[in-house]
Every structure is written in C-alpha cells, then in structure tokens.
Image (tube, rainbow, N blue to C red; front, side, top):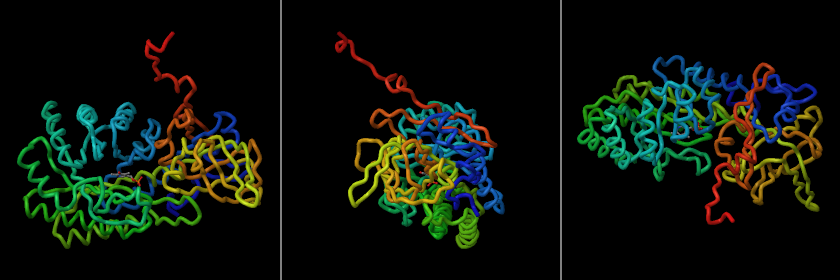
Length: 439
Ligand SMILES: *Cc1c(COP(=O)(O)O)cnc(C)c1O
C-alpha cells in the first residue's frame, strides 16, 4: 500500500486509547489543549520514500514539496532531510524556508501575481527557479534581476488544457484558468524574453493540472503536452529546454469512499508517457520535476478536538459541536470536503449513532463532518479527525477572533511542539488604537 492510500497515519494503533507516533492522543489533548494539530513524522518520511522509490528508475528527477500545503520550519527540515526541494508561492513561504536554513537554490517560486517585494526577496535569497506566469512579471523580474546583477533561471508556466475530474476550485490546468500562459501565447513570451531580456534564462516548462487527482491518465496527457511543446519550441527558436515540471495534485484518502491511485501507479504512467513522447517528438531526456503537496503531508496530520454541546433536531439531524471548526479547517465549508473521524478515548467502542460534527464558529456552514457513525458522544470526549495535514493549518484563519491551534510532531512515543498555540495576547498584539480614540 502506498502511504497516500491510507486513511490514517502509518503509526496508528488501537490500545486503550488511539495511539499515533507512539503517543496517546487523549494524553496529548490534555497536555497541549485542543484543538490540536498532530503530525506523524514517520508518515511524512514514508510518503517521501514512496515518491523516491516510485521514480527511482529515472535518474534525473527532482522532488519539490509544494509548501503551500503546510509550511513551517520543522516540516521544512523533515522534507529537506528526505532530499526534496520546495515549491513556494509567497514571500512568507520563502522567508520560512530561508530562516529554516534550507538551500535556497532548491526552491522554486511560483504564482500568478508575484509582487515586486516578493520578487526582490526571492532574488536576494537566491531562489533557484522562477516559474514565469505572465507578461507583467517578465518586466518586474527583468528590472529587479538587473538591479542585483543576477541571471534568473526560469520555467514558463503553461495551461496545458487538461480537464481533470476534481472540484472546480482546485482545477488549474483547464484552458480558462488564471494561471500561466495559454498554449497560443507561449511563442510571444519566448520571443519577448529572447529579444528583450538576457537576464532571464528559460530552462523549461511548468504546468499543474489540479489537486486531489485520482486519474493517472491526466498525467499521461499533461506530460505529452509538455514534451510536445518543448520539441516545438526547440524547432522554432532553436533553444533547448531541458526541464519539465509537471506540478503536483495526487489525491489522498479522506474517507473510505476515496480510492486514490498508488504513487507507483502514477509514476509508471508519468514515466511511460515521458519515454514514449520523447521518442515520438524527438527530444532528449529532460529533468523531471514533481511538486506534490497534499499527498506528502495530508495523511500525516490529524486534528484533536474536545466534544462540547449537542443538539438533536426533533426527527432530524443530531449535531454535536467541537471546540474548533472552519477557522482551523475551512475545507468542508469551502469545498464540501469530507473527513473521517474516530473518538480517541472510545476507540474500542462500536459506533452506534449517526451524528453531524459541527464547528463552533458563527456560520451555519461550519460543519466538519455530515452524518458519521460514532460511539455515543459525550462532552469531554476527544474527537480525532484524520487527514488534516494539508490545507488545514495553512488555510486557518482567526475568524471569530479564534487563536490558531498548536501543532505537535509525534515520533517514537515522543511529542514536540512545532507551532505554538496563539494566545489572546497574540490576537491583540497587532492592534493599534489611534491617539484620537484614547481618552
Ligand atoms: C498547489 C500546487 C501544487 C501542489 O498541489 P497538491 O495538490 O497539493 O499536490 C504543486 N504545484 C503547483 C504549481 C501548485 O499550485
């Protein structure tokens, strides 16, 4: 089984309570408070190794963790130690990696509206690759790189026109997208860069076709488009591009009904397409970049909540509320994302009631899980929601002036804080009262 096909972290055990990374989840909730993000180090390393093994037959592959899924210093260290580089989309992510001591030449900067300040920072810190997304950005990069007297290694982000079956907010590769150059615009941007700008060196093409992808065929088609374009560009402009970056997007198992393909299955399809199309279009073997985000970090993460109030609507839904919700996990309210959960302190009891797990925030849409079968819940129980490693903390907000939860890393029965819980003091620390309001 590939790690992305598991519903729970690889170290999950059932003893008197739910155990992850050798740690008792009920004890962790008591020690660190709830809501609490828990991250299992072995699961992260296990996925990284699945990726490396799956692509081991291709000797020029570069794994870049898409840090927007979850970006903090400890995660950066773990992923770095597995030999991965990083895909980033903001000054905040770049700064986090820099401060964590990451080799910045292994970082790629991507995004559809990089600001001048962000470009400046990326150039100063020596980010290894820029993924150029639009014409406006070429002018900015060119100006700033000249000022710093730096040559910029760039990929061109293209929209390959591939529709994948995933939620429309997380589709990015279809033609009508805010990301990247349409295939019909590639030539003019290349002409422009070749003519105007000697500071930008185009190394290859970049695409990303969406997220939570279950169909390997999407990647086959994507690789073909990229290889075909590289060959066409070579013929027309006589420039050899030797890098293709196929983005991320591989799906994970949020509930029993999700059946994502194994990493090895995806790898076989990608490499098959690469070899066949290289032959077909007559180019040399390029460096292959992958940017998995969700599939690296989702399964490793769980969120612990304390159960509070309940409401039985007569003859209808039973709502049971927990002490977190859309501020720490906005995905259900944003994308109708589904999650699975268990009761950490009742792990050996059989489910006997159907409940809807509600959050505590002031929105009717703040529902974490609709209709899940669980043991009878009581106030004080510890609910463990699985697969919250990706796009939970990274999308968390302070809605309702909620303090963001802490995050704990577990491994070999040891637990360590990797993000401190925000305090009430933190919440007001950026406030300012203008003098005229002080009396
Ligand atoms: C979001 C994103 C990724 C990661 O996607 P996942 O679905 O989390 O694997 C990779 N590359 C680019 C360019 C992205 O925007």
